[in-house]
Length: 329
Image 1: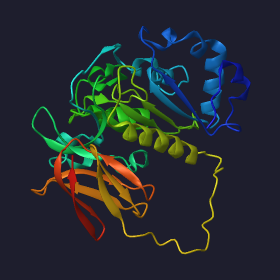
Image 2: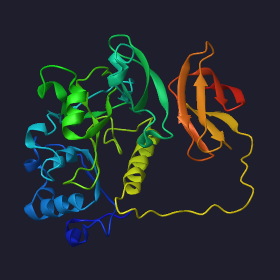
Image 3: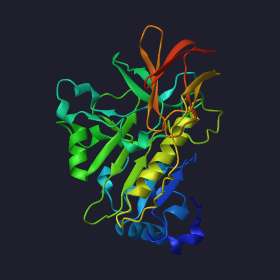
């Protein structure tokens, strides 16, 4: 990974970078891409960025940078992000979540429009917890932040685009996108928070736009119990976009011909978390309450890691054929 500045415009080319990440989270901005910082909206920069993505470069646009989907000509102005918040948000202990079961409300009644994105590559290895929505629906979602949160959303209210039918399906088909995430409490077709803009004949590159306020890399107002989830999401998205280079340039890693059998997994307790060692990458770790309810699950990318948990007391951990009882303090 390399940090580039406005002085590196000449280098913005798919031959130099498979993926560019632009993150704008600045208090005091007004809505609209023409109100972004000057270096990120001037004609020279926009022209370079537009040509980059048209020629096959991939973009990860976060927070207020999601508005750049318009000047790079991936979506028309009428479909620009229309939820724009700059204020303060939650100051309590309730986590903010990313909900990746799109159109969950119709999961049973109309499964053809239900899209379970929890298994998408961008969520690999992230911890999930049971979430209870306002309508008392219960489902698993990804906790992203807990504590003092700035309400810096820049995303899509689909209700403002369509008056009838399922808004997710219409927006998806009209703009050739996949909606990968929304606010934690959303179970219908109202809001799109993380969108994958797929390549088109005119735009060869792929864009992921993440405008959720819950996506806080470095909170200005304190710590975050779920930093590991945010960091994992970031890394997953960048790797995913790099792997989608339409020219097929990928780096391969040869596996040495040695015994790579992992040791038996070991689970221990740490404050607010379960730590694991020796888990086979790709295996899923499940955490249950004593009464059998699923509290969290996480797919291991590395043999060693941890799972953040809001619960205290006894938990049952299961991974493959192994299980353990852990006391979380």
